[in-house]
Image (tube, rainbow, N blue to C red):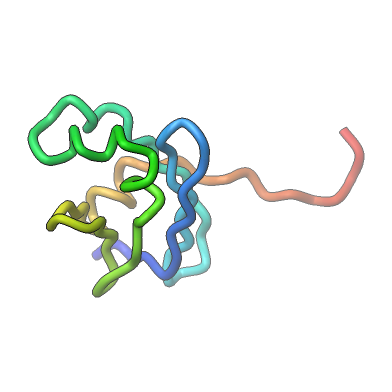
Length: 86
């Protein structure tokens, strides 16, 4: 079973920064969904910014949602920051 979403932060270019209940931070790109069904409405920036976490998944106004499984499996880990100069 994949972890639930604890927090979701909308970023530029229709990307979500997600923190999961296992402590992982991952990035999910919603752009591949923006040509499909109800997800087309998320092209409107103000609607995309209305993301919230509900029952471990994310949703937007108007009954638009993505499951925690979809979000976890379709996201990429955020590299750990060590604080050392590159």
